[in-house]
Amino acid sequence: MNIDIESPTIKLPRIKILATGGTIAGSAAKSTQMSEYKAGAIGIQTLLEAVPQIKDYANITGEQLCQISSNNITDDIWLQIADRVNAIFQAGDTDGIVIAHGTDTLEETAYFLNLVIKNEKPLVLVGAMRPATAISADGPNNLLNAVRLAGNPEARNKGVLIAMNDEINGAREATKTNTSHVSTFRANELGYMGYINNGEAFFYRASLRKHTLNSEFSLKDLVSLPYVEIIYGHANDSRILVDAAVNAGARGIVYAGMGNGSIHEKAEEGLIAAQKQGVVIVRSSRCGAGTVKGGPIRYSKEKFLTGDSLNPQKARILLSLALTKTDKLDEIQRMFNEY
Ligand code: SIN
Figure 1 (cartoon, rainbow, N blue to C red):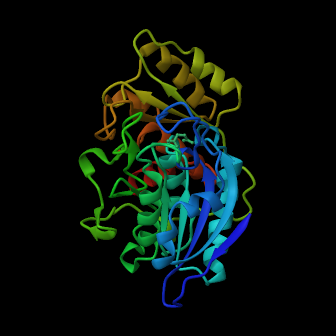
Figure 2 (cartoon, protein in one colour):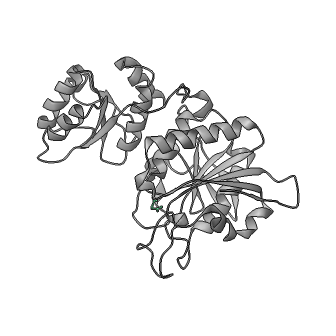
Figure 3 (cartoon, rainbow, N blue to C red):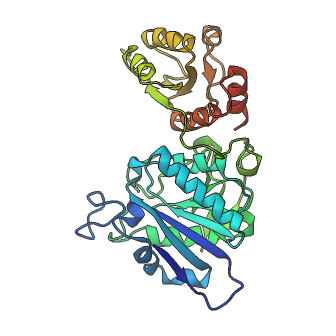
């Protein structure tokens, strides 16, 4: 469904909202239900009706791209979203785009778009932790803030942004850190990019890693993404899931290792065998903070790559996009050092 909300002045920024579902569009039977609700139940029209003030800040057009709970996101949906975003920006009549998205995989969609969108205009992802029907729902104010951020020239060329809870996060660093709190998105030690105060954005830092216009990744002629699996390391681990991933046709495996990307010796046996068959192995960490850059020399001799400070779910995205360009290990490691 496409909608237009005309604002009285033509000087307002032209913002497109793409709705995909999530808790921001969630509906529960009672206003006191915060965790028992249907995500993605409400369409974009109703979402916007909850924030009539939006037309004071932007000329809005909206599209419903899908209506899902974001734990069900797929590569196909990502390719559709990215194609649509690139097409809207190319058309030249939009100043910024807001994507309303479930928070569960919001960081992954944001990082994927950060790598494949070819424009410096603001692209802001927004979600909510409480359904639209809840007392004190956080969605309406988050949406208003996201629209204002997308219309703010200072948000240009900073990569894909996440606006929630009056905080601005960057797509590369931010991660969902809490199952239910509205302050769930954080970039751990690297910190917020900025704050939103009384609806106005204040930036303090930007990511130095490559994104959007400087990214070498492109969706041109791409109809699917290479299959990359994540294996989560743990005490008493084995090679069972590694072998299963290889048998299922994985071209890459991100091992979410213990501590500094350490691998259980049993899983390591499987990863060595996988690497010998041409599967690209990237060590990452389940710690949630810090980098995986070095580690025992043995791992580099085994030709395992390192995932830098990307968490496993983002390392999976970068590895998948890297495999669309090359299978040379040095090149893929360079990408992990740059993005
Ligand atoms: C979802 O990710 O779609 C559900 C959870 C949320 O949006 O907070």
